[in-house]
Every structure is written in structure tokens, then in C-alpha cells.
Image 1 (spheres, rainbow, N blue to C red):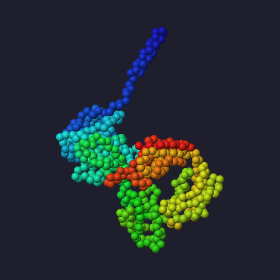
Image 2 (cartoon, one colour):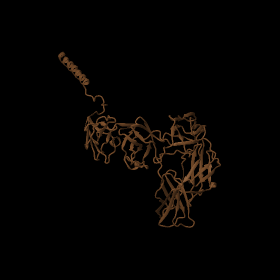
Image 3 (cartoon, rainbow, N blue to C red):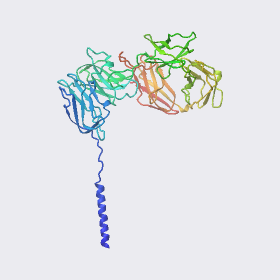
Image 4 (tube, helix red, strand yellow):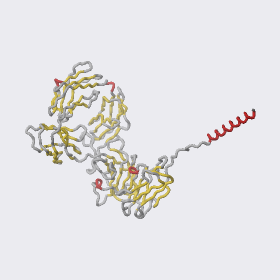
Length: 537
């Protein structure tokens, strides 16, 4: 019996030992791989001269993939067609580059991989790997560097193309629209840029937020920045070039009008609407009349007319400023007549420092105040008046607001009449005001302002302007009735004194007006007053 017990105990001891050994020797995944792939060799070798091949192979010490190659990999000078670069979608121990374009003679080429070369397992990047070769006897070795900023946004876009155009007897500024540059690089997600392996000579330095990724400037979709002077290499290699990108205002162009209802055409346009006028040259009735006003959001004019008449086509002449004139012809047919719909941008809460404004989808023509009532939360009648602005197609309700109140605005039938004879049914609108203590205030003092006027703008976190003031003399600025939130302060140096920020123009050599941001956001809280000084260094 005791022998049997001893055998059981021995078996248990051996089992515990085996389990203990198994725990100590268990297989784990090991430490995470944080080592990027290492370049081993290339055929032809990196930094080759007298290059005459049509294919390159670049080898690494492990399997690699190419991440975002369309964005990350930059070939300079650009090629058309672009070379094919593999692997795409798979893994390999080498990169193969196949040239489909004839290489330029006596030219140094640079293939910048950015952070596209990553290992297959963990995605560790071999950052900013470059393959360089020359079709001539030597490698160009000059370089420049600089920074990119946005003319109006606090942070610039990522993946901005920076280009050098060779300034020779064939150069003109218009080349940026039709010719790829001599040298290019990309900022990736950085604010800095550098261009390497440049030759001696004179160059124009350009930055493009290149939406089409074709290295051509397309003003409709691209932002541009430029260095005013011609760069001379090697003399300017020690400089740091700071470029600001901006969106140009397009040259004015009237686009084809479209009939949207029985009595309305819309006239879209590009560029700045200076003194745009629409004149109808087709035959019209003797009592023909028009009403024109701008769209609140789009670059469009609303063209309304009365009475309706029958014809197949209409011929319009569009003028703008003193130089633009164009004739547009469009088809014309009978359509449904629009009904009157009244709306307001005030949803539920009316700020104490703003008026209640309402508009309509059709042109407002007359308002009968006798058929309108305004009462507060105690159902007391509130005196008011209404100003109608037909040029903006909106009406402003003027009354003495009080804090923490609720108002009911009622339009009886036929209180509003529009341009084409529609009238309203009964309309009831309710809105309220907050307590004064629900808002915050910023008292702002500017220092070191060298020239006036300046525009001081308070923006939200989306960089949308909440309120702005034109400042002509040193003074303390008061920004009140601010909802609790984080705000940014920016100062626009209004060099031409037109009361707005002006963007730049590449062909005219105009840089955008300068903007300075206060470094930190201002945290406005309810019933708080913040005193802030902005020193403009």
C-alpha cells in the first residue's frame, strides 16, 4: 500500500516538474520588430555616372512594400511617361524601376522615395531613401532648403510640390501652366523642403499644392507660392527660402446661364464679380422688368424677370469691370412657377448683438408690417420695424432685445408678397435670447503696429471668421457676446486699405497680404472678461 502511495507521489512530482519546464520554455512572439529595412546594393550602383540603362534594381535586407508610392515617390527631373516602379500591392526584397521615357543627356536624376519603403511585417519605414544617378560624367551636387506656410491658414497643406524652373532664353512665367519643372521635391507631411543634386544656373522657385499631381499649375484647383527673385546657384545655396502658398482669384468669366424655374435664370461665374451686369437683347414685352441679386453661398447671380413670355432662345450680354464683355445664348421654355418659402439663418437662439434676418427663395417685393406681430414670453406686444433690402433679397427685423427672453414672430396671410405675385400663408417663428452672463468678452490691445489700417479677426477652430473689426488707430478692441469656446486671433495687414484680405497673383508678382496669428487659442468662458495683448513682432 505504501509502495503504491509512493508511486503516486512520484508521478505527481514528475508532472509538476514537466509543467514547470513547459512554462519556462514556452514559445512567444518575441520583441516587436522596430528596425527599418536596410539598403544593401543597387544595379547600377547608387550615385552612378554615365548612366545608360533603362532599368534599376534596389535591394534590401528583408521583404519590403511600397506605401503610398503615388504620393511619396518623386522623380526629379520629372519624366513623361513616368517610370514604372514595383512592387505594387505585394512584397519583394528589391525595387524595380523601369524607364519608359528617354533620359536627358548630361543630367543628374534623383529618385526620392520619401517614407514609401517599409518592411513587410511591421511597416517600419526607411525614411527618405534616395537613388541618384547622372547621364553625364559627374553628379550635380548643389542644394537649397526652405519652409512652406499657408498665406491664410495656420497650418499649410501636406504634400506640397516644390519646383525649380530653369531660367534661360526660353523661360517665361507662363511655363508653370504648360511645362513640367526642371527639379521637384515634396514636403510630405512636413513644413520643410530641400532640393538636392542641383546644377549651377538661374532658377525660379515655385510651390504648388498640386491637386492633379501633374506638376502643372491649374488655378481652378491648385494653390501656388513663389519666391519673388530669381535664384542663382551656387551663390544662393546658403539661403533659407520661405514660401507662402495661396489660392488665386481666377480671371473673371461668365459661365452658361441656366433656367431654373418659370421666372428665373441663374448666372454662375468664375473670378471676382466687380460690377457684373446682365443685359437681355432678345425681344421682350413692353412691361418687362428684372430683379438681380447674388447667391449667399455660390458664385452665382439670380436673375428674375416678369412677365413670362414665349420664345425659343434668349441672348444675354454680360459685362464686368471695364474690360470684360461676352454674349451668351440659352434656351427658354415654360416651367413650373416657384412658390414662396421664407427662411432665416437664425435657428433658435438670436445673439443679443445681432438682428433677426429672414429671406426667401423668390425675390421679396413688399412687406406689410400691419399683418405681422412680435410678442415676448409674457405675450407682450413688442414694437418693431422691418427694413427690406432687395439688392440682397433679405429683410431685417429691428426691435429692442432683452436677455433671457423668448419671442414669437407671426406673419398673417399676405404679409409678404414676392416679385412674381406669390403671398405667404400663416408663418410662426419662435426664437430666444440668452442671458448676458452666458457670453464672454475679449479686450484686445495691439502693440508694434507699424502701419494702419489692419483687420483684426476672431476665428473659431475651423478658422471661420466669427467677428472682425477694421482698426485705423491705436485702441483697445472689445469683442463681446462671444459664446464659450476656443477662439483664434489673427491680424491682416490691409496694405491697400480695401477692408478685406487680398490674395496674391503669380503672373503679376503679387504676394498675398500678410497675416499674423496670435500663438495660442483664447479660451473664452461664460461671464468672463479676458484682457489680451498681441505684440506684432
